[in-house]
Amino acid sequence: MHNADTDVLAGHTVEAGTDILVCPYLTHRDPELWPGPEHFDPRRFLAPGGRPAHPGAYFPFGIGPRACLGMQFALREATVLLEHLLPYTPAFDSVPEKAEHGITVRPAGPTLATLRPPRT
Image (cartoon, rainbow, N blue to C red; front, side, top):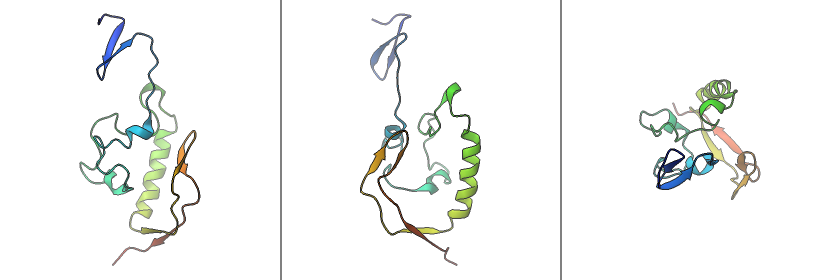
């Protein structure tokens, strides 16, 4: 039964006061939100329509009033870095077979690459 103390989320009744956790790792790899979610393609953020329009589809720094305070700095820093790197093509010398899951998700081992200069 739905009343003022409950809500429905994705078809599930949720009682008031219930803690709900989201998993950015799974959300950022949801094929319903992201075409080719396992494919590394930083250019998807540059192309119009390259990333989902849904505001909750991408939240590497959290979302809402408790989002990371360093988000704006990190996004600006990443933008400058990508502006310098995107003309180059990485050639990966080794790619780890799996990821390590901790506070962050990272490759389970070194990911060595050589940057190839842009074609002229």
